[in-house]
Image 1: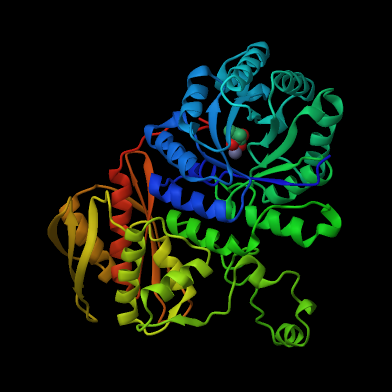
Image 2: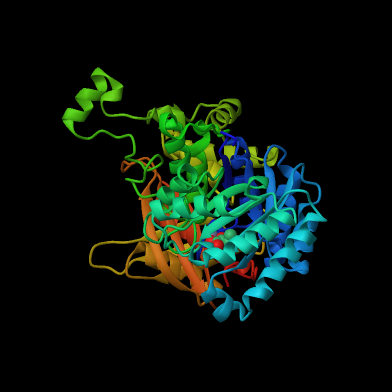
Length: 512
Ligand code: KIV
Ligand code: ZN
């Protein structure tokens, strides 16, 4: 058995299914480039048949990314599979990932199909996909809650049809590590042709055990592919977190005995990019990428680390992309220094136009904030609206007045379809007044379901990063904005969410 663990990232597919985490094609492309830099083996770029937008995103990623295999999800039918194959044309290395539910509950209640019908459809789907690409993955959805005998029958048949990877999803996050590990082991031992495919694990985090379950699937079960997402992004409680699984396997190589292709120093930039693009903030105590992950607050710990780092540290912060929180650039820094720092942080903007736009924003920021930290640069680079192309609404300026005992007033100038407009309103506070000023002109009618502010580099001089989540006609979107003035950051975040609501992409959910 190979000692290489394949890292299959599904941030752009399963991660994106999380309500509010939907991304534009350009955002997905930017994240895909970061995943390629991270040397992820397989990037699940989307679910091509679910919407035209997703089709185009998979297509764009298949064209742009050269070093990772690009995968599209598809249900087990000819139309979905053909659509996936079409989107993947032009990829250096393409994979179709087809799935159908196999648990009694899903077959009866959701699919309204008999086990024999599901068995036939799974076989035909893999046969059809194998005629289009040589790399085919099959997933029995809700596999962990499926009947073992039936699952053996289905997986043996799809391997015979040419599935090169078989994945065993714990779709609802019900598994516990030991049992899941043995489940994979039993499947591999019972299925006569199991050695003809790579075994993969796909765990959801409903009971907080997605990483532990995945690692048990690897250690006990012998799986050699882990499906995961940056920051553990995903529906409900999320998916297995890429950074945790990768650092566990790397740090405990003595135990797992496996190799990885991942360039771990790009992990933090990927985490920041995903968080800033989706508006899903990373909790400070999150392993590996949380702000406190390498912070030693207690005197005893600080003393120990100063004397010998490994007294309290099992990983090196630099190995996952952390550098000291130091001033890196200032107002006199030039374009080359800015570009160089972006590269050192593992960020490569896609075109000269984007670099110029980000540099202009950097200069604007440096005029107002004398010390620019890595966090500020990452926020600039991750700002999905760096080039403002295809954007309905773009922030221009804001003025507001607030005084104790008086109701705040705000005026916001922004462009709507290229035309400058101004909205004015009062409100409970300056943020409320500013967002109402925008709304007075836009009349979106959207409901705000989340508003959060975060200090990017942790002091009052830092930029505020605001996330706004809006809901309208059943769609949920997140907008993110950053600025040293949190009222301005809020207005930017609100406009960014309105832009997303405006791009009316409808999609079919994989587990619908
Ligand atoms: O969780 C799941 O079952 C899935 C499949 C579509 C692979 O995401
Ligand atoms: Zn899933």
